[in-house]
Image (cartoon, rainbow, N blue to C red):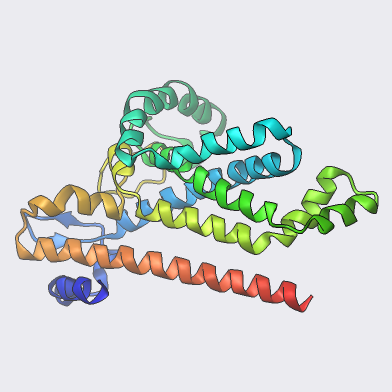
Length: 279
């Protein structure tokens, strides 16, 4: 896969070099291509989704494993896990007809009124936007993070809980000081799994991000992602062979970003596990 992507990207790489990554121009007619807005859109939507999904998913996992009544634990977990089986295009359609109208009518005006002094929450409110794409990604990756985190927390030896409770810790103190730190490496793995899903998501993001090849400080503004650019333009690469090569070059960048992020995450998990073993 890497060899094929590299071969297809060579014409664009020879013509644009590393300037392809930093350029914001995308003009198939003139034959000028730059991936910077798509790179920013991909990373921004994924990191925003992760920032919103991790507290929610981890909170649900902790509740289901430590605090929820026995009869509701399995049914609630099953319902949440079923969200992962919903096709991406269905999420996108639901986002267009339900989520975006709700956000533009209630949430975005509230954020602008309270946080409009920040550039991230100022400017005109669009329907499809970077923040809308991040919200739909949040909903899509919560089941992955929650499911893996729940299994990791269930794998914590009962003796860890019992020892903390025997020393006088409350249930929440046992969770926050013993159980979660013990499962830290597994939880980090769950987070990276969610990040990998967010980075590569295509259809739902394409339908909600607005598909404007531009970088804006406002999260209410439309943006673009690398996967969305490829999905929208590859079948009709009007700019000829160089246009097609530029899209393959972008696919190579997406491949590289995903591999580097996952490699960094694996290194982080290894260091955490090693430090815990040395302790």
